[in-house]
Image 1 (cartoon, rainbow, N blue to C red):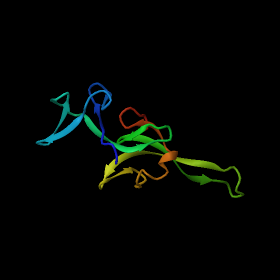
Image 2: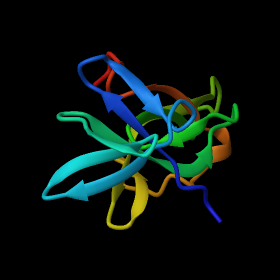
Image 3: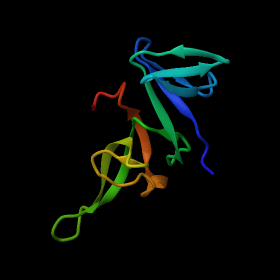
Length: 128
């Protein structure tokens, strides 16, 4: 069974609040995000809740929504079959239609995940 965890991008502080730092229990009330922290509820206006996918990259780092992941997409070579190199793609992890996907590639993130590596996230990555 997959572990259910969240992290919150705190827009004003420009940093993450994670389950490792605080107990995070997301609650949606009247269209607003409330977060249970230490048995209290605090509202984070403009902050972004991101869920853990249950998967880890090749370095054992947990993959969350909003992470930018580099993963192998195949090999390329010249016409003689020489000068081959591995082609990598970089994509954002999103949750749509009941599953975690790569945003641009429209494929589930379980594809070759053991070869993938987190290289940043949508909040502090210059490749947005």
